[in-house]
Image 1 (cartoon, one colour):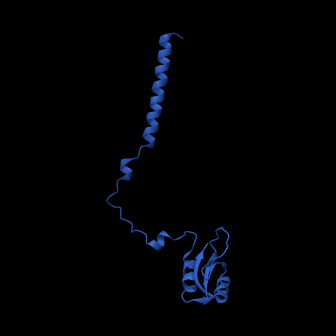
Image 2 (cartoon, rainbow, N blue to C red):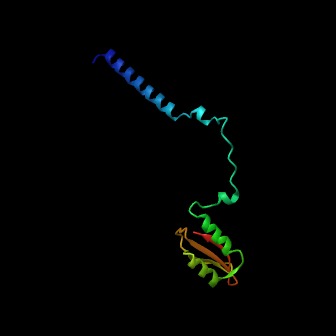
Image 3 (tube, rainbow, N blue to C red):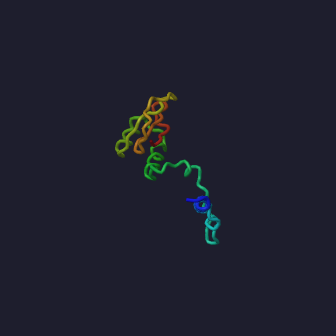
Length: 126
């Protein structure tokens, strides 16, 4: 290959490389029309703090169950009996302000209980 052929080949490769770079840049740039809201879009309400903290693995039934369980302080044995009858597991997380050793595994069907003076005062799923 002579010098002019090498120059032509180099120029061709450079043109191909620039073309590929340009194509990549076009693909990664945002579409300005996609970001523009349409006249028919309606604003979504902001989630409440409770909704922001909700775990998607926890069902509305489970939330209601805990609300009813904690409606009035129950003795530990009565609360755990209700939990088991409902088909859930439980463990003690805190007793009279003292954290208990618990595993780090996540189980959405298990309640971790807080007991103060023999009464259940809090319960969290997981």
